[in-house]
Length: 441
Image 1 (spheres, helix red, strand yellow):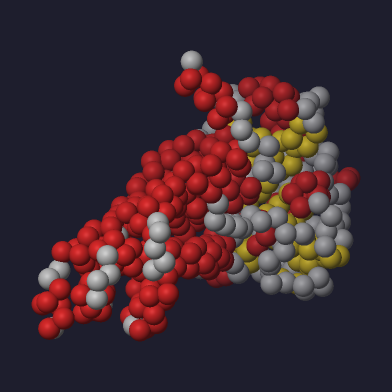
Image 2 (image 1 turned 180 degrees about the vertical axis):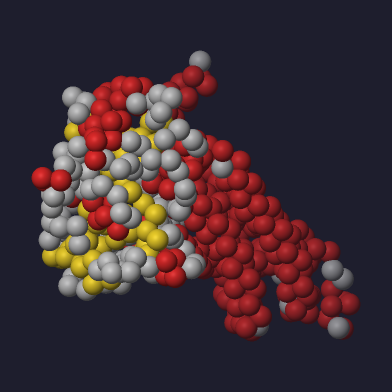
């Protein structure tokens, strides 16, 4: 009956309250040990003098603890930040329809703009998708061209609005020779450029000669690789490759839907969005055929995160093992530091100081260094995740905003409790030393 009561009480608490209580529980051994050791004594003035006497040695010891703690908490926080960043990047891609193949490969190509060669969806299939009564948006996504480090993507104005909302500068493209750039593309409104066939090294050698596109607008930041993409009317991509423009000849100059199935040259992927959540599942079932593959990028990403869950556990275990090794190093380091004060501690004992007072001095000294290192380690962790997040964002074009959370504070609390309990051993060792020998040394 009691366990059931506590179970209901615990799960009835807000998540923040659970995390806070768990933090206190992990830190409780250190608190109880401190109260028990210093009870009825005041070793703090002597401890302060000991720390000041060898301040640079103590500072180095604190710094080593801070670096180890900071790297441990930063490792876990960064992994969580990357998962959130990749999930946020896929939020706008409700349902994607492509030719049959690997869902992972097509998700990487469509959401994260990783280059890949895939079959095209024909005009009849696109028309069936676009004309479905439950489809609110069916935007072709035609990739394969680039300009320097930016992918050039052919699509529709509705997709641009869906992806980033209102433009931050300029206007939407209205002709085949106009483009809208992502927030991080190094082109300004009014600049012109020539796209190249392919993506990556060597693409500039295959420039589409005689083609010039002009930037007329800039998207708002999206926090995903599309911030470095250049979006053009899908007709522009078809035109530079000598293909029909998706419309009958008498409608030459039109961009955007509706497209004529007989003049639709194909597209690698189609973004599909329904107004109702249930309709997305119905559309996925309807468009999963022998000729097409419909999938939720978010669901595929969740599966990948699930597969990578073991990696996260390994990282967590590595962080814990690192902290255990640091704790062992702290024990060895404290033993060395205590030797620096051996003569002074022996003098205290020779003057009649109770062993328990000497014990409290040694333990308080060690606990102070450990506590200072742990607190400083939180600052090191904050700095580490900030620096690493910027590097990962620059390298992957996925906005990663990692920050320390309760799991990291739990790790620090557990580390502090473990190491201050280990610090009892050097305190006992200090009392076992021979007073006369230390006084003579």
